[in-house]
Structure formats: C-alpha cells, structure tokens
Amino acid sequence: MISMKVSGISILIFIFFCSNSPAQTDGYFIYPQSIHAGDYFSTIGLLTASLPEDQVEEASSMIRGPLFTYQGLYGLENNFQLYGGVYTNIITFHFSVGPKWGLAFNKFAFKVGYDIAYWFGKLEQFGFQSKIRGWISYPNLTLGYDFKKFAISVKGELIILTHLTEKQDNIEISTNRNSFAGMTLGIYIEQPLWKKNYMLFGLKINYTKFYYPTWAAFATFDRYLYIPEIVLGINL
Image 1 (cartoon, rainbow, N blue to C red):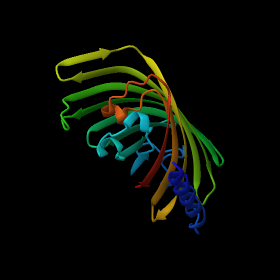
Image 2 (spheres, rainbow, N blue to C red; image 1 turned 60 degrees about the vertical axis):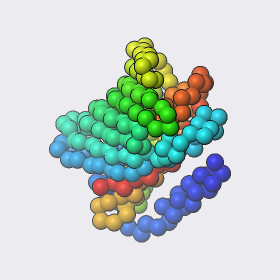
Image 3 (cartoon, helix red, strand yellow; image 1 turned 120 degrees about the vertical axis):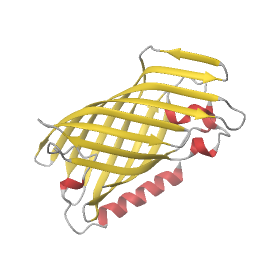
Image 4 (tube, helix red, strand yellow; image 1 turned 45 degrees about the vertical axis):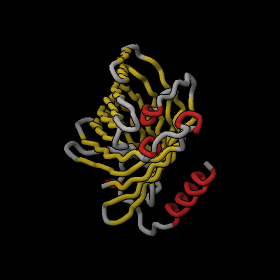
C-alpha cells in the first residue's frame, strides 16, 4: 500500500512538470469536454488494484493481475455522447455502454451518465469448474477543470447489481434483485504526450461489497471493502 502511494505521488509530480506546451482539449477523454456529433475519442490502458489480503489470500496471479481496458466516446447531437468500454483480466470480461450528457463553462465542465454493463467470468484451472455472469448499472457524475497544460477530473459513480448468476460444477444460483453494492471516486489527470496522444493517470477508490474482478476468489464476506486502484492509459 505504501509503495503504491509513493509511486502515485511520483507520477503526479512528473505529469505536472514535464509539459511545456499547452494542451488541446481534443485529446482529453475523462475530462467532460463537449464532443461534436460524429467525433470519436478512445483510450487504452490498464488498472491495477491493491486487493484486501483477507479476501484473496492465496488467489492466483490471474486474480491479482491488472485489468486491460479499451474505452470509446462517440459524439451525438445536443451535447449527448455514447460511451462504450471493455475491461478484461483474461478470466473475466466486462462490457459497458451508456449515454452521457454534459456542459462546459469556460474552463469548468461536468458530465452525467448512466452506464449498463454485462460481465462474465470462467475459471477451469486449479481444480475449479466455475462460471459467473451478471449485469451492473453505474450512474455517474464527472467534474473537470482545464488548466491548459493539463486537465483534472473527478468522477464518482454508484454500483448497482441488477442480476447475478453463479455456477459451481452443476449447481447454479441466480438473483434478479436490484441491490446497492457501493460506490467509486476517482481523480484523473490528462496531459499531452505526443502529437494528439494524451497520457491518462488516475487514482480510483472503490468502496464496495462486490468488486467483480475478484469473483474467482470466492469471497463470502458481507461487508464493504476499501479497494484503491491506479489507472494508466493513453488517449488515442
């Protein structure tokens, strides 16, 4: 945990001082800028989490491994946007899509959205025959400020489980009851890297009873967990 904090501070200092030219807003992704109808923006990256030891214990490296991501935004009319994203750590896949709407006021901007995600996982190693699938909703709000050389955004979202099906060998359990599973809060910095490509760095805090990438750890805890994440990406 200490090493993650030190690494995060070092990267923040590097990002703040390494840019000598002003940023162009057409390279931002998390920052809630306006997008012209028909324009498309994307980012690729990874995120790595500091998982609670009492939850994962001796879980495999695949569970502890980073999530690789690809996300896109497509501009629509009247300040609307369509979001889509894919997250995977090989044994788990998470697909999300949803509308967003926002406005900018000088250097300030905000965006509201509602993402719906379908995800599934499959584990047939280490003597397990396990599968899982489900639906999650993410109402979200993003606030941002453009400093010209870089932009800072704060994004919060709720986590609502709407469906979950688990299968262990021949035993299958399903639930369709909507349940509040927690929330996330992240702070993100974006700045020019080269040409129109931008660097994305974020610190994201999950406070949740259900962190889907760790489903294969088979945790039975019914309590909220504090799970910090580091997010790294390149905006294309």
